Image 1 (cartoon, rainbow, N blue to C red):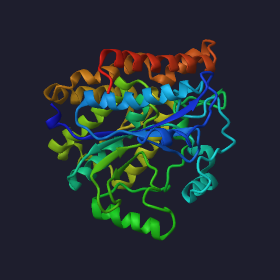
Image 2 (cartoon, rainbow, N blue to C red):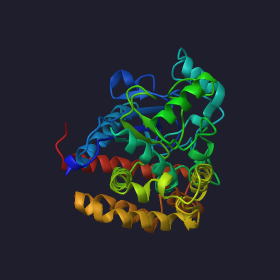
Image 3 (cartoon, rainbow, N blue to C red):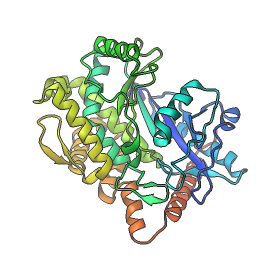
Image 4 (cartoon, one colour):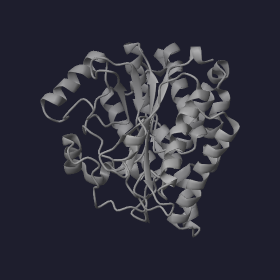
Amino acid sequence: MSKELLLKGFEVELFTGLATGTHIGVAKDVPKEFNDFVNEPDHRNIEFITLPNKNYEILKRSLLAPRSRLRSWLTDRELTILPCSTLSLGDSQKFERSDLSNAYHDLIEKEYGTKVVTASVHINLGIEDLSLLFSALRLARCEAALFLAISASSPFLDGLATSAHSQRWIQFPRTPKDVPLFLDHSHYVSWIEEQLARGIMVNERHLWTSIRPNGPSRPYELNRLELRICDLITNCDLLLAVTALFELRVLSLASQPAELDPLKASKLNIEELVLLTDLNDISAAKFSLEASLNHWVDGKSIICRDWIKKLVEEVTPLAREKGIEHLLQPIHLVLEHGNQAMNWLKGFEEGSSIQDLLYDSIKEMEEEETTFFSQNVVE
């Protein structure tokens, strides 16, 4: 099975704090203990990076093992991992620097403040063929809103319910403001060089969009596609389901470029596609599964939940052929029962406190780790 699939890797951002939901930063200390963790500009964030692999069973261990190790280390300090993508009960008025000597962190604090203090998961797919990479970049950008809707898990900020299902994506400063739909690698390289020359981007990492090319020497050497729009997905099986859907769309595109590359298959022009994708992303951030979106093929209105269901149906035969159809099941559950944000908001409206909702989710994360490692040999 794995021989026919793409390499996959994750960058998982997490908040740390008390079981009551209060954010407590430890980012200065964690990388000293664990070499697969790095700190973020605000020390309430920490991130771990998994090694790329094609096999979903190995990926599950790669996702849960660092989380379990971190949790054990935090438990000794009466802390835990917080299952949220924003400062749900935190202070968004204050930036808490993790490294005062880092000039890039200094820029981020001054330019963006706590708008960037969020937790998310970035999903990387290995794609060596540059033509396929940029074709997949276009398709993924046009469908990024669907992945955000499945993953939405940030309806709270500063102890209040916001008007959004993904407050993270609403507040996060997408940079630069105007990003084209790249025609090919050379278009991407020239555009990046122009942004750097004009000071719009300060370095090659300063491209904060829903989806971007990635590689060992950006923008020149690229070997993977990075989906950045997803909120933190604490349920590992759901994260693997989202990854499988992402991968299956790319594999479908590889065999059906005329039908799935927006540059070839859309009735809209490039400028219309860029506007459509940006509006879809915001709509999905506000209403997730219930959002009214516009399809990239013809611009017609479609409810997000219906679009996702249609996408899953389209990739199911390929998933069955690859032996990964079972991985998609958690998406069916989200479509039926709602995503994390929707369920939290329902509980909040019924009288549960944000603190209680976070506590219950903390326990669910702990149970997932305990169950997995009780059934599998620990590394």
